[in-house]
Amino acid sequence: MSGEKGAIMYRTGEKPGKGRYYCTNCGQEVILDDDTDTLPPCPKCQNTTYRKG
Image 1: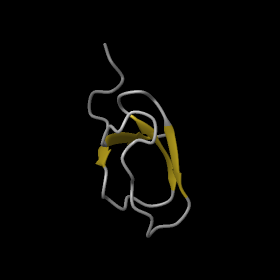
Image 2 (image 1 turned 135 degrees about the vertical axis):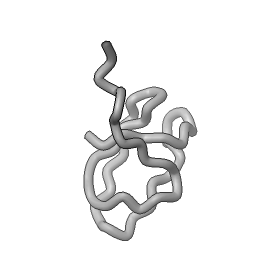
Image 3 (image 1 turned 30 degrees about the horizontal axis):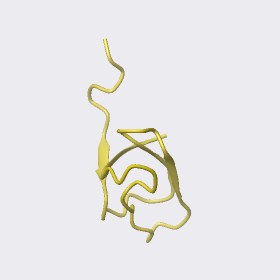
Image 4 (image 1 turned 120 degrees about the vertical axis):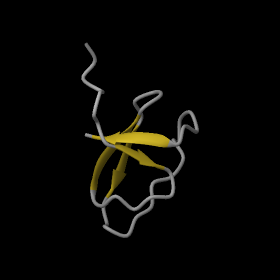
């Protein structure tokens, strides 16, 4: 059984707040250090969905 079920997903263009976000495709970490920062496309694979770490 996967631990991903029910996980909140974040998308490129959203401003989910400070924290560490991980690409749902390749696992690349993106760190937002300000509440006004916008999630970019994944810098490694260009995926547009993340989970918070």
